[in-house]
Image 1 (cartoon, rainbow, N blue to C red):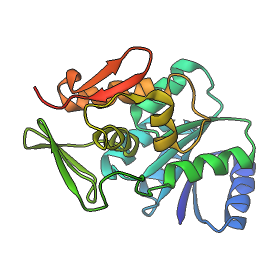
Image 2 (cartoon, rainbow, N blue to C red):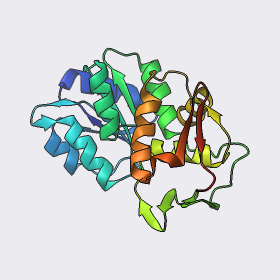
Image 3 (cartoon, rainbow, N blue to C red):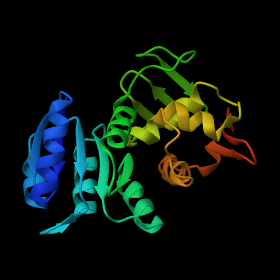
Length: 221
């Protein structure tokens, strides 16, 4: 598993890289926007948002556009809610605020990299059609009325969780556990991803809010 660590603090980068390598990851380090965008492809990016030659959110946006399936975790001192929301909307799969423990970081890495097929759902490679949606679970592709839309890893996982139970109200906590595989998720993280998903589907009514419960994928028009 190759990790791109984008961190301009040499001491922090060295400590993180050492701990990650001890856990079996191949680690490439970048200390600037320029180095991050020139780095070889990775499975996971640990991204500091405060870089000397630009904003890490621009790196996040660019990497997400280049590689929709790449896992990105923002690792930053920006802890305000508005910063978390902005990071998630830009394309980060998760957001970790400094200081943090390696145990917490490892848990979040494990969460965003887990791709196991959920029990009771369509098998990998299966394709399902629900109203205007065509979802290819194996290729992780989504079409709306025949036009492909580009979703982030978490957006696809949320949609897939609902698509495995079309027309059924899926509780918020169940969506979080299936998508993030952890309870360590802020109260607004799901809401942020859901708002972005609805916008990309071009029909906010496709994913319906079930007040006091969670969300439901509309079966048909």
